[in-house]
Amino acid sequence: MDPSRPAVNLPRLGIALFCLAVAFGLVSTAPDYSARVNLISELAAHNTRGAFIMAAAFVVLGAAISFDGWRGLRSSTLPFLLFGGFMLLAGLLGHKPMTPGVPYSAVVASEHSMFATAVGIAISLAFAWQAWLSTALHGRFMAAALALVCRALPLGMLSWPEDQGLIQRLMYGLEFGWPWVFYPQRIAG
Image 1 (cartoon, one colour):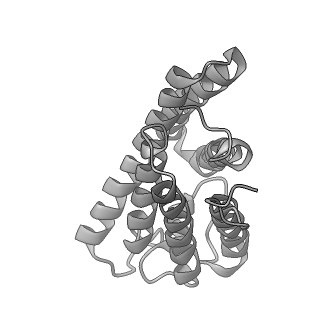
Image 2 (tube, rainbow, N blue to C red; image 1 turned 180 degrees about the horizontal axis):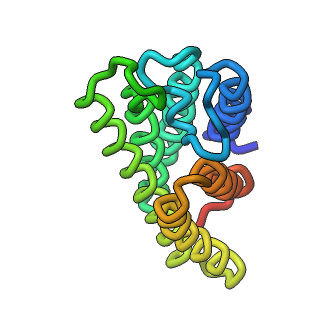
């Protein structure tokens, strides 16, 4: 075991807790929430039942990835560190509620959207950077494919809003699957 790495893989722990919060959120949030239509961030929306659980999951996931990135900071992990930092910030700021008429801060919701967008850009750059740095053809192909997926699926969410929740869940599954397997143990660079 590498003494510079903890016994607990923080990114994996953060991903696992995030997934549990999403599953719990499906049964604890507003009754009209739909995993097919609604975004995961809407589980952490202003004045929404159980929102603090999903907000905490965003913060924990972001903190776990950021902390892990700082400990082994190098140019190849910097985009992942940014991904984690933006995820943490998005979690601190609530999404606009999905239920009409629920009071919320438009400024905070706008800031959440800004950081959520930065999360997507950072993870896309992280995968593109890994594709560039990888010396193995398989690793290069997989990272490049994920970078493209991270750009294409949000466009699909805009094109098919009635399925945006499912598309986002697919995207998160792919985005989190790669770090679960590779980060930070076998990251290129």
